[in-house]
Length: 93
Image 1 (cartoon, helix red, strand yellow):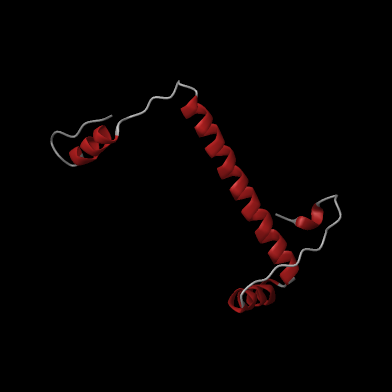
Image 2 (cartoon, one colour):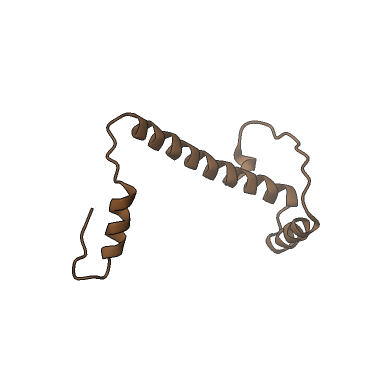
């Protein structure tokens, strides 16, 4: 992700981080010849993209589960199925 390629102007955000995280950011900044601000912005963009994907997937799954069209397997059947793994009587759900 490259936050400098966006057509929107950047805004300033102040955050508090631990000294350990600050030191890690400084080390990475030195190693990559990138500013700490660039790395922090890139990390936030990656985090938000990941969280967005997970949230969308959860909402989609909940919608399917609540639609009445989902097929559920009981806890007992799953336990029995897992118990059959590696045995001659192993079965599929």
